[in-house]
Length: 364
Image 1 (tube, helix red, strand yellow):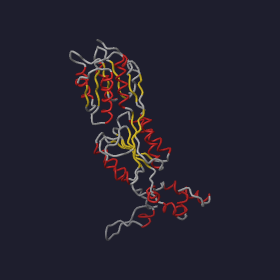
Image 2: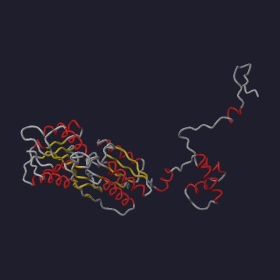
Image 3: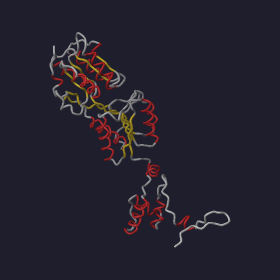
Image 4: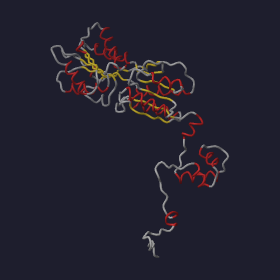
């Protein structure tokens, strides 16, 4: 059979039969052109209402018709458009989670717990990171609101959350976790940062230490300020004056923390113990202490991976990150169910885990 395409002698153009140009051409799959209920109805040979009943699990469709519709759905790769349902019902079955730093291992179990609660309520979780930037936090939170999430769980990077007032009035359920909201009245779920730090420092004092250093995060951050307050309270309770050189707050990058720890450990009267204000600080301090021959006691706030395998094991004040996330998410869905009205501040206890580093006696 001759499959050569003839050429018009006068124009030099190829003569392409209509059957080749259209009917024999493979259908194009263009991105963004999703199959619709109308496409499913046409393929199954039924009406739109019938397809709608099958898609939404409604009664009134015979088994044979349902089978044909389902076959058409599978063949076309049809997915229900939930945005249309939002317009009808006013709920998206989705919540947003604004984290501070996705790379911080502390937020892994917290995020997972929020997701598990959301899933139990048939909701989708959408999360993003503020990267510790208050402007980015606001941008992300409002972007999620614009996409009509039903509620938000926010780990604040800033201390002014008045930008959320219109959203709260519009009915967006919101719970702040790990740190309280600033300048608005809203639900928050926190750890007992003050009490945990006070207990950790008191533990060092009980093992004979009087010169105890504190290395923490930026003082504008609620958790850092509360842990510093706990450190001061424990020292005051023991009647120990605190020298300015024993305290250092700032960014938690390794270079800054290393410099702060080395300065505390130097000079004629170095500290004999360090209280590390969070997990990132603890890791850097461990590296600094590993380079020194004189033993220095260490207690860290937040548990860290492999802390029990080091020699000595690292004593920590542990938060229950999963409980924080779970409590915040459960409270969010209670707001959505209409069972909560008055905002509350909930503080979860911390736990001192002794492994050896916090029980070392002073070297001098």
